Image (cartoon, rainbow, N blue to C red; front, side, top):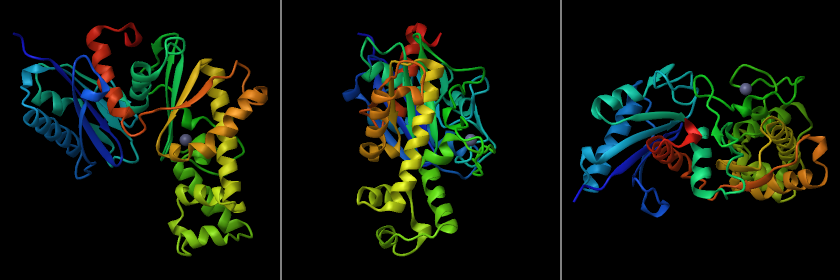
Length: 335
Ligand SMILES: [Zn+2]
């Protein structure tokens, strides 16, 4: 009897590294995941952590190296698919982080594929969640520390020349903005609507307006530096006017961003993910209502369906595994 065959995925984020192993037939319930906090000691500490998690998974599950058919690495970008590196990432700590090469040295004959995390996530939506009538035209949008996207258009995953297609969070939604993004530009969508953006806009408004908000200040022990998106959304739900104005701004620019995404890609469905979807009950209903009643203010194309992924925490790692499966099968989606 031939040995069972497995695939491995890794999801590299600013806070966590997740590594997973799955039989090649890839069913959600059979995926085994291990995670560790992202080490930032030197440029090799991430690849070392991945190698160590893979080794642990193999030992724990009694799997031999030669049973592994492929490894998928999904990383926060920007990436270079060709060289297998991550570069200029503000959250991972080093200018250039080699990922593929050090891992390849430990798994010599195993094919290793690199992808950016949002492109991985849209693959996971395609494989695990999307219905047949929508799956050829879907966009995944993460609203988290930043905003990012992955696009499948006409049954093809859009990758771009280096693998960084669909950096939708850096679309400029307000060209007169005085607010500068991490990327250097002014008025990017994530400046207004990401978790970091919402926090920064609140701190900015506190400095410049006649600010008063007892609820919000009570929630952060009267120290405004403790304000995060979480408190702002919570206070807005409780009726706090100041917090609601910041949240409304986040929602308005999300309408602009989503409208542009739909203009560019004419998508059947948009799936949202990322930490901010804990407050999807505040963010998404006005968006859905807008695209139902008066879409033309934001998009010229038929509006997409708006959904939230069912796999909020695991979508990236599920995408890394899907990448390997699709590559090994020669799936035309990523040829
Ligand atoms: Zn930007």
